[in-house]
Structure formats: C-alpha cells, structure tokens
Image (cartoon, rainbow, N blue to C red; front, side, top):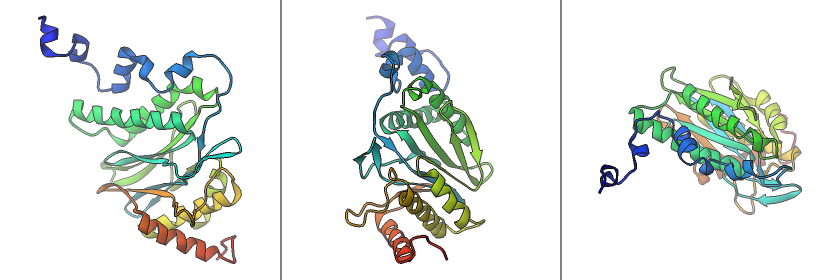
Length: 275
C-alpha cells in the first residue's frame, strides 16, 4: 500500500493550499461549480424560475434582511413559499433575487466557502472579505447571466470590528457596493425603495425596522406582479433575518404573522399607506 493510500486521501487533498474552497473546487472538479454544465452548452436564453423582492435596512444595534416568498416563470407563479433569505455564517445573511436555482447553488457554495475559511485559518473572515468573495462568485457566473440566469444577492452582516451592521449590493458583473441605511433588489425594488425612503429613520428599534421592511414588501407586491404579498389564507409571511452582535436570528412565524397582520390592518381602507 502506498503512502497516499495509507492516509485515505490522495496527495492533492493533503497539499497545502489557500483558504478558498471555491478555488480548490475550480482546480479539482470545475464541473461541480454552480452552472458549470450550462456554461458549456450552447446559446440562447434559459427560462427558469426567478425570485424577487429583497429589502435590507439598518436599525439600532444591527441590520435586517427580508424577502417575499414568490418565484415566477414568465407570467406564471412557479412557487408561492420559496425561501430567499439564508444565513451565510454566524454573523452574515444573504438574500437572493434573480434566477432561483442558480442563486441557491451559489449561496450554498458561499456558505461552504466561509466555513472552509474558518476551519483553515482558525478565524472568521472579515465582513468585507465575505463581500468580496461573494462578488467573485457572481463574476464567475457572468456567462450564465447573459443567458438569463442572473444572480443579484444582497449581503448583510454585523461588522465585529466596527460594531455595526452593514449592507452590500452587487451587479451581474460582480461589482460590489456598500449601501447606506437601506437597499432593495428585484423586480419590485423600485416600489420597495420608495417605501423605505419614506419610513426609515436613524436609530429605529428592531421591532419598527421589521414593520418597515414588511411595509416595503407590501408596497412592492401592490405594484409588482412578480412580488408576493402576505398570503393570509395560506399563512405565508415574508422571511426576515436579523443580524446583531449576537449573530444571525430568523424571526419566527408567530411574530411575523402579528407584524404582517398589523400592516394589513393599517392599510385597510387606506391602501396607499399615507399617515
């Protein structure tokens, strides 16, 4: 038995490398990268479910991320209760808009990337480092984006060094931009952004921040058919992740139902939401 066989792993797995799992995968098995098979095959736009809308905003003590639950394919509703907000690691979360399947693949790889870095380096990657690594993954998907499989995430996290919540947005080429106060992406983002501008203010408590995020998604759904509004009959509420110094925490359905019902009741008879 050879020395390599005796260790159970071939030499390439035991050779010291960098801390990027994505780079290792690109060298060892590039066919396993998100969308690798699609990049190799032909031209033309691919029809696939798309997800919208994501909003992010800062509040006193952290930052939160919220998304509606609808995925569409053309004029059809492909899914009514899709999850679009994910924890990336203990102190960051990602919301996805764009091609649903491609986005979920990239986010899963991003989660492994951060976990791999922590195990290799023995420390958490900085928030800016996380933002830059996600940008590189989006950049590698540009060929698929040109075929209609674009991925537009929003990354939020708590910066343990600066002791504050931060928001990062992206374009399809992998450009990474830090946003201030609040941001939204997806087909309903223009309507959500208008609501955020009116309702957001400095040093909001978490409870008010959640209500503002839900109102922004409500306004997006009111004018954008691809954005799902609160579904009272099916009891489908937005997904909300809160990121503070204590880490990532998802808001439970009971609390979301209470907040959403309050927003809906406040708009009854006054759908414009003027105060």
